[in-house]
Image 1 (cartoon, rainbow, N blue to C red):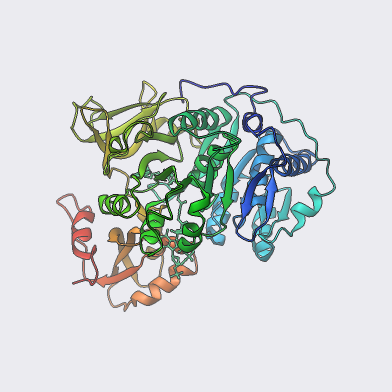
Image 2: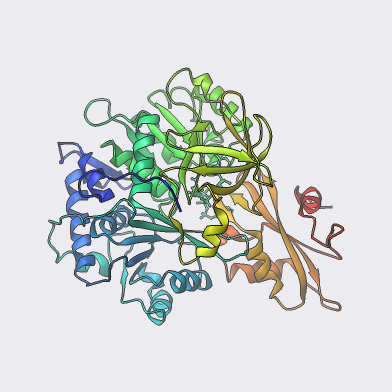
Length: 521
Ligand code: MCA
Ligand code: AMP
């Protein structure tokens, strides 16, 4: 659906462009893990070649999907790079997903290869083989598993597959308003164009003395940790201090050795709770970037007060990678709290009313975007794709916002019924679907409630069938057995009725006002 595309240099493969930015001193350290393990640039090149050769030896069809549901590790990142090199399509899956969720993704994407942890091999391989997957490998965070065992026999030389800018590089599943997840198809051109823009816009410092050092503390199965962070570091030949699971103390201890940090707002909130966060520990830092969820002005101001640094907030989506950013260059006061900054170079962003008419400066409406970064469409959902694009090729983000006289964008809400909890998206329709299936449940509504740690959390409000007696804790326990843990409502209320408007539609705004703060009435 997009109208512009950028051809990656070289043979068109995103990996080739990343590889071209590696420092000339290939023996320098590229990644250092929390247990002190160091990977050189040469290691990244060789190990991703071996994994790419393994994938290519499987005689997979063109466009084959390589799905991975593994813990965060450098080897998992290498699998992503290998998939790019081999010209296949990477499909990362949150480790928190349970069997019904995985069955949907595998059934929908039909990956030729699935990589999972050894402990999940039993149930994941059963799902994968029954969906027609050719090979299931294991990969554990301690660098064991059949994937690396098999790759160890492959050559460490590999020529990246030739690609067109429009060829798929990854599919990122994002939850749907109807509860059915949609696979956003991102191309080599989408990812590279965005990474190149961010390299300039955020002033990434390449190689040698004064090169950036990124603290990588985010999961790598979503856009933020996988693309924004990893592409940023690789495309500027910058070292990464790699943390498999966020720990505020660990990050603060490493700040004196780093220059760039990226996090969802919850990470900033948790770091602020640590007394060691101060001007001295952050003196060396060049840039703190926040995104994936609204950064409260309170967090923005507290960070400034405590560290002297102004957080740079940016805005993006799985379908578009990054769209806007506060400025890096110039006076830090140009980074305005409560806004997500200006459209990035190459991104056209406009605000329209419900009839699709342009709105003047300062008026609130639906945010629509266009650019080389905008995805190719939803996997096997042409109607849904067509629905989400305007006739002149703009993608309707589902975010509601405004643009001020200086061009700064503020997000004030969402037309999509979505809760963003600790940077993860939770669609109420999906959770409601599971609750409504439970015995004795007549109906349910899930709404977002403000939360000091996660920003927002889900709250379930449930109606029982006549004569049925429901227990909130049993409903929560039932959900835990079926859904990823971050989707579980933090509170559940069984009530007599749900508030409705004249059309009979549940008034979620009323529920939010009623149950959005703890303790409930
Ligand atoms: C964990 N829990 C959560 C969440 N994470 N509950 C609600 N929301 C969450 N995000 C709950 C678990 O269910 C569990 O509950 C308890 O917290 C402890 O789980 P644990 O895994 O130990 O949690 P944690 O390590 O403290 O994780 C919190 C976290 C993590 C570090 C904030 O959620 C995280 O890494 N978030 C970042 C997500 C991210 O990268 N988003 C980017 C998406 P119980 O004990 O009851 O089971 S990309 C994107 O949005 C766009 C494109 C963009 O703009 O970037
Ligand atoms: P995802 O589906 O995980 O790609 O999440 C994308 C959504 O996250 C966007 O449509 C926004 O609603 C939200 N988002 C991302 N960055 C920000 C931000 N800085 N402020 C507010 N919302 C954001």
